[in-house]
Length: 337
Image (cartoon, rainbow, N blue to C red):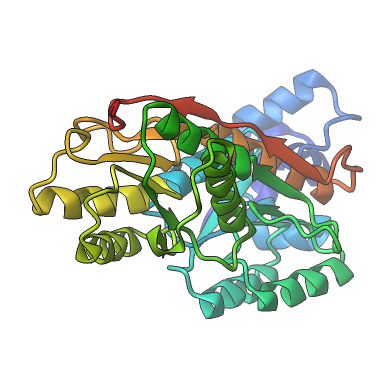
């Protein structure tokens, strides 16, 4: 039989109530000496608190949930690291739900997390109308949650987002400044606000230098590698030899396109320039690496966690929407014409 709370109390010659308060972090009325004695006893005896019992007493499980579409994507793995490190700092555990882009899986994780009394959830949503309904239900329950890259003004959902318009605008402007006039574009899923903003940034950069928008050079993706491959296949089937550059809405799709181009004998950037959005350390073995819009992904995750912990503790948020600016990072995959 394992060590229980009473065993720790007897070992320290204190009450079980004192041990309970120390292991639950409620030490305001307990001396530093007694607190230290209990903590040392916990370590020596190998006492593990009964989380189920503690959650019944405190109405908290000291866990948060994270729901993301693709843990294999660099963006989401780095995001999870930022959230996880902040959870560790706050003495919380993190439970991860990977949806593989499935709305049904996302909804199931929401049910499971609430059933396990997870104290709050961070989402990177799939951007569908059904999610709006789900968020409204969570708000009606006053359940703490934060979204990443999805701000709903009508619901005032606490969100952490990026300046997606500026990111795509800066990359497309970088291409036009190097002489490119025919630039193909791979979007994200067009139900997503971030995808709409990136497409708008691309269009605006072209308009600024009087390049007409050509919808035949726009290929819809879904932020997954496979859609970058498909976009590459569709692009090369057009036979457009006038196109000198391709801009992808994220680096994962850019990588898919990159591999299709190389398989067809194209050299990046000698024969075709390529850029994407999504993080400086993405796929460092590529030569050249993909010119990108660098994102403070770790800080975005950390900020989302900090926002969630304020909600869990019932503290007011100074801002419901936090916007991160992005920075262009030239890494050699865009050539001068």
